[in-house]
Image 1 (cartoon, rainbow, N blue to C red):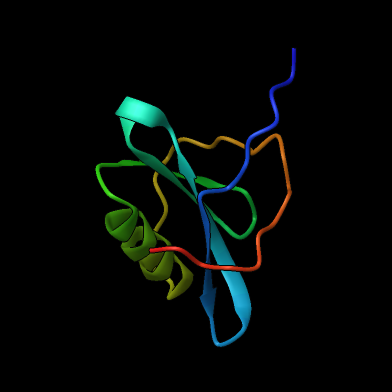
Image 2 (cartoon, one colour):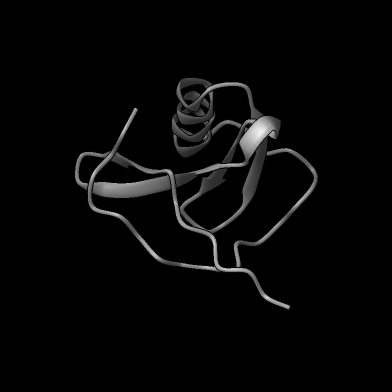
Length: 79
């Protein structure tokens, strides 16, 4: 069964979407890069956004890889 996931927030840099943050309830917030690469779980959306912007600037990614099941975007960034 596929579950559709709604983004908590999209992260933009100079008009380009560089990532998405998903709320995972008590587990925290999961950060995804623009190519749907999971950057891991974080305790706050601000820390997830930092991970996305750091990765977009060329820092190495973690070894695990997870893909999003939904590519639905939101236009407003909430942080």
